Image (cartoon, rainbow, N blue to C red):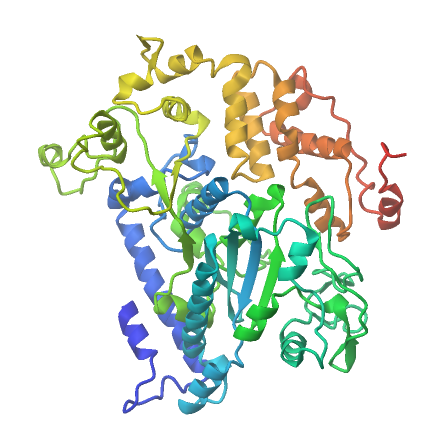
Length: 624
């Protein structure tokens, strides 16, 4: 079906072009075409759950969702596996792969947003030659030209000694396609000082006489606004303020602030650009790279990135999943449903991941064309190899409903899993096994072990041991400590000193803090308090509350619409503890029930609502 629609979306000389010249009707056709293709794939997922649960469940063991290990939800789950491009599990695995690359190469150096320009010569000529009047009604041409430009740009990055890159392509609602690119630079090319940043990134308008090409490109493509009082109806305005924090302040030098963000050099050079009868200066320039801007003639925002606390939020942003539309339901006359109908509806909403994916799904013509042409939405170098493991005799078994058990037993090779073959290869490394052998070519590959929830029991402790035991030949080698083979992995962890003084729970939170958000960490901390035997809650809180409070300041800035808000560490800790206390209430408990945790001191709800009061209170007590 996809191939048919992709065939019809191409312009061919000698064929009728009624469909391609349909204008806005063509946009509707493209969206409907992709929706039908996607619906057919989702319908297959929905109707073949037995195959998905056996054949494809291997791809979804890496999910961090609590629902995968929570036994309270009964009923048959309708699972959308990670093999479905664009689904939650697909994005979650790409997110964790990105963090694995980050762990191997360190923090990324540059974050680039490349947006398609509908005024490109290639698009204009193709649109005119096909008989169309506007590029906005030819998303097929826009998608193909943007793909060509993007490939050339990635090829340029590769030739400039880039260690690796992570690429995710998403689509603006009703807008043009754009790509988010994260780059790791070679050690010799890293931007370590403000002077290095100025050599790569500029936030100033070039001189019109000295650099006419740069001036034209910046004035047409890289100016933000006008907004604010000059244009209060601008889309970026919310509550009278620009959400992108423009205009910026003049600065003679690039400065890296205490939060690790770069405040780029914006000198008052008196060079301006006229936009909608308003003169814009350097305070309205979006940071760019001059060479990329002039070559590709598109909006290319280049940002310096070297802040460890926002690594996971960056990768969550570039892999945040498909667009959704915001809807509002008005309450009307209700008829009390029957008990069976109500329970059926509840189960469907809680367990049907296919319907959850389709809920409020938004599809634009640009996204529909990109997907119909089967262009990739993610690209990554180097390759990330996911390392799966399993307990003894609990490997994945793949079968169909129409097979008998003897047929399954005869067909399945119990030693054919990645984990067992790895252990066999450790045993016969020189001779090599039939399936696994040492890589002969020098190819960069990053490996990562899949996640194991602390509630998964022995599987969780097996993962702890695999990070310590080197080159085991079998399961007994993993459970061996000082020549003694212990019956369980938990007992082995205990004799290796991994379970002393809540060490296992420290490992759980430290491991989760790499990829989980602050709200997820707080939820995990509450689960440890309620369901696990934590002997020293204060030590656990003291060691990890900073990660659990990572989103407090950002959330308060959004709530108060005050982007310069600074919250002291004491208030951050109390606000995070308040959030933990609210989660504990779900289990009928509170912070005071756990001796050792800090005493909950409720922060005044008005403290971070009055802007004038906040500005007066933003001082450092220690310096005073």
